[in-house]
Each structure stands twice: as C-alpha cells, then as structure tokens.
Length: 439
Image (cartoon, rainbow, N blue to C red; front, top):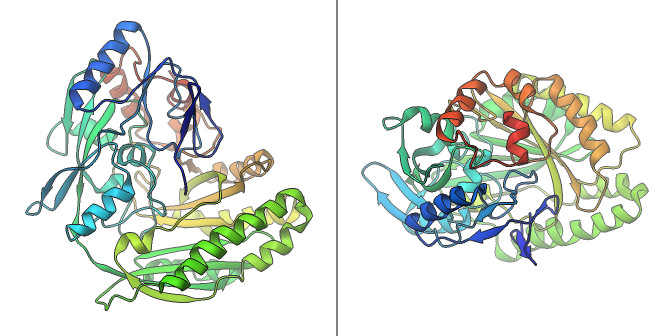
C-alpha cells in the first residue's frame, strides 16, 4: 500500500478515502512526557483524544473532533533483549522500519501481515494479522505494553504486571489509552520458502484442511466470476536463500500486480460488464513460482491499488461452507467484483477482543476498487458472515454494534468493565467506539 493518511486544511483522511475528520487540534509529541501532558490538557479542555497511525483502517476507529495524536516522533527501537528474546519498539514505528531494523540485528517477528505500512500501535490496536497454522497475529506476539491512560499516568503491563490490562490492551481499539511502546517476542532471523501456484477453487475447498495442516502458512485468493484461485504456501527452510530475481519481481509484483491491475480496475469501473472477462484474465496472469527469503520479504508485498475492504473472521471449520455461500451469492447476483477474495487462517489466542479469541479462525476478506459502489456487495457478504458468527476486523468496514459483539465475544463484558475502570469519563471516545462498545 502506498501513502499514509493525509491532513489538509485541518481535515484528516484515511488511506482508503472512507473517513474524514476535523480535529480541534493535532499534537505530535516527541516523548512520553509530552504525550501525557497532551492527554491532561485535553482533559482540562473537555476534549476527547485519539491517536492515529498511518490511517490504514477503513473504519472511523481513529477519527476525532478533539485532539488528534500523531506518533510520528515516537519511533525506533527502544531496547533489544537477546537473552529474553524480546524487542521494545516505540509505538509510532512503521512496521516496515521495524522489520528492516530487526533484520539488520539478525532478528525477526515469527509472523506478520501482508503489508507493513502501518505503525506498530495502529497494527496491534486493530488486530492486524497474517496467516498461520500455529503462529498467530502480531498482537499475539506481544510480551509487554506501555500505555498512557485517561488521567495522564503511564501504565506498564505484561502477563505478570497488570495482567488484566495486558489481556485486553494488546488489541485495545484505542479505547483503553494511548500505546507508547510495545515489547515483542522475536527470534533469530530465519528463511521461508514460498510456493505460489494457481489452483481450481473446487480443489482448494476440497483439500483445504489438508493444505492448512501441511503448511505453516497457507493462504489463497479467489477471483470472483471464475473458478480460479492463486495459492501461497510459506514454510521454514534451511536455505539457501533464493529471492525472486529483481527484474522478475518487478514485473510480477509491480507491473502486473499493481500497474496492470490498476488499469484493469479503471476499465472495470468505467464498464462493469467487462469485469468477468478481466477476472478470468487476471486469475491466470501470474504463473507459479518458488523462492526463499527472510520473513518480511516473503510475508509482505506492495499494495498500491487503492480499495475498500471488509473482512470477517469465522470459525475455521465453517470456512468452506461460508466461502461456497459467498461464491453462490456472487454467481446469482448482478454484482461485478473486480478484486479477489482473500482467505487466511489463525490459531486461537487469549486476547480479549481478538478476532481469533478462543477459537481457531479463518479470515475472508472482500474488496472493491476505490470509487466503485461497494455497499451492495458488502451488505450481502456481511449477511453470510454473520450467519456463521463471524467477527469483523476492527479496522475494516462493517455495520455491527455492541449488541452483536456481546454475543460473539464471550469476554466482551470483561473488556467493557476494564474500560469503565481505566477511562470512566470516556477521554478516548469517538462515534465508532460508541457503536461497537455501547457507550
């Protein structure tokens, strides 16, 4: 993905163009002390406070008409503990910068998402994840947090220190405080071999359990209006390192996956009737390839074509049925969908409002090209996802509210009770939190 959120003439906009807000003021603290002072001053002025990262959420989770906190100066690695296998990063550090710095130190996160434009705090607060049989989301790799709470105090938490806060704040939605530093578990850098290849939709569905069980990281993209998918299997490798050749990588990842795909979507937006034919061509454009590289160069890829997105987490055992229902809905509807549907997995974790909390999970993400009407598609897809007790990604478009979340999250009231204790006056409120948390 390309540029971050923008603020012009006092208006903040997110990357996807789905949210705009006019904060009363913006603050860019250069230290934790300056951040605590900004929170206290906001309280004196009766203004709400919201931190914002790179703006890659499609929901209004970071929007505010109060004080907008930009963590641009709170960046970099604060500490490396090689004995304990942890690294502490400042909250405003972009994941891209963190990954490069870790690699330079001979270290790596165990798993990560497929883009790295987000800040550390933004990624964990919304539940950013990749795909993994045994390794979970970025937040599940956290070993400690530093948090500025509503009264301006600094709270540290881990499994041993303030464990109730730690259980929730790893994916805190910005509702519990402003994250200022995150301590991640890391390991010596390793190699992954990626195997990418086309596969028929029906075969992927029939063999999904086997493909999931046999691979450390398995994901696939299904192209609506076709019976085609592109699959990707990432597994640890003893080497040697064999990265994608530079010219081949540019041609496939930049020219085809971004440049040509951008033009195809322009054509599809102007003439929706061409989309099924474009989808058939797009689904066959990339050939099979195998390469071996360090983790962030395998897990992540450039995404420069702008879109809007909805993603739901369903119980893993319900994936194939849910996906077949989605395909049947698209096939019988007049919808024209130019973006592939992305499918990933995660093991159960113990984070209070993680989309994988307490259950093995599969993720289904639907997208539409920016500027294309998406409401009909997303509404129909959401109806299918919620029928399977799906949990929407906190940073992606959805229409669910607190009543729904209290049914699909067994520990929902645990989170809201903690919020009542840490932020009784709702210093970190906004309309999105009011909808999803109830008050």
